[in-house]
Image (tube, rainbow, N blue to C red; front, top):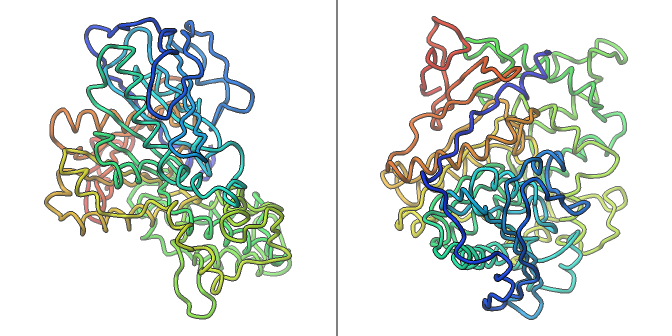
Amino acid sequence: MTAGKSAITLFSVLFAISVFSQASVAAVPCESLASLSLPNTTITSAATVAAGAFTPPAGRGGRGDAAAPFRNLPAFCRVTATLKPTSESDIKMEVWMPVTGWNGNFQGNGTGGMGGSIPLTDMAKTLHGGFATASSDTGHEGDSRYVLEYPEKVIDFAYRAGHEMTLKAKAVIAAYYGNGPKSSFLDGCGGSAQMAENEMQRYPGDYDGIAITGFSQKTRHALEQMWIWDANQRDKSSYLPPEKLTVLHNAVLQACDGLDGVKDGLIENPPSCKFDPGVVQCKAGDGATCLTAPQVEAVRKIYAGPTNPRTREQLFYPPQPGSELTWSQFSGPQPFGLAADFFKHFVYKDPNWDPRTRPIKYDTDLALIERPENLVINGANPNISEFVKRGGKLLLYEGWADGTIPPGVAINYYKKVVDTIGARTAQDSVGLFMVPGLTHCQAATDDFDSGWHGRMVGELEQWIKNKKAPARIIASSSKDGKVIRTRPLCPYPQVATYKGTGSSDDAANFTCKAP
């Protein structure tokens, strides 16, 4: 395995789910829920799905392998509904409830990107854990062209769909089992993080525990995604093909992998990495193992992050060293889908917008990007005092190698939350864990992707149960079904530091220290 590959695929996470000693069973037949009456809600179907019998509709699987999460699903009660809290609203949602083995809890799922579909893949993973689960399409199908005509749908997408889905899901769960969930959890990344942040800030009673990664600040992180595209596409000589990104990434590892005392294909604390891309510049011309001068300048621009060309103001956080292999998704002939959708419909209100004929102006266009009606889709309010006052726990975790939404967003939000609610309160209610090598929402290995989010909800369960924040979280790497490496994740700003003796593949030989 190459050093670059191992940086993305190091961690897979041990995933343990706690369940009641006695399985909860339904109080009424699933099919009877078709006649359930709820405000502003039409139940469109209610049916029991036999174990292993579910096949997702074409194109509606969500992130990742469309088939894998649905293999061996237990029998569940599937309820579909349409919610209309306003005359413009048309929110599609689903609730899935285990026929047997319900663990007594509810876990909501948000929708990634710009919404527009129900993330059935995420729901399947949650159902496998014994939870009753639900999600919505955020109030629209497909892209964001609805923005041009339906302002109420913008509010649905921003936050109302998530709240309405949560309320209706709890009511359906209570009707099916005869009692509502004992605890409610939400785990969000990207678009799901938008829901998670807004739920916590606007509706503090909806969830008991919330885990967030891939933080949402769409007006600015869409700008950062376009900044990377511009660095590659404004001048064809600057384009960074995937093989050149691999050259760059390997050079970064060569320079910074060993800063924590262990050569393991990971950069434990990327802010400590002082890497100059000039070290990989070709001596003359071009070559397979070096970057041309224009490519090096593109790299410098990407590492700098979006900047106002007139005032030099930093407009958003830059990606960190170690994230280089993720940049290719923003470097192709067409802009990244989320960014293109946002700029077409929210910013320029032109479905035919083309950045080649109408380039983004990183100074004057900010007024268009952050119109008041656009800011509503962000979830950046750090005042979560009502959420923590009622006992809510917030577990933040973020990948240092996330190039889609740079990790500075998570760190900044955490600091603002601590400043807003006070350090003592935050100590009992909020935690941030930075994950070396983790990309956006997932890593490259299937068991990392399938287990990581569930693990964080498990940490929240234990936190609420034991009234003690996690001091550290153990992540692991497996090969052929066997754990080959464990490593602690430390509360920010601490980092895992090798003690100097014993196996570097054993978490016991690391301590959490300030960098």
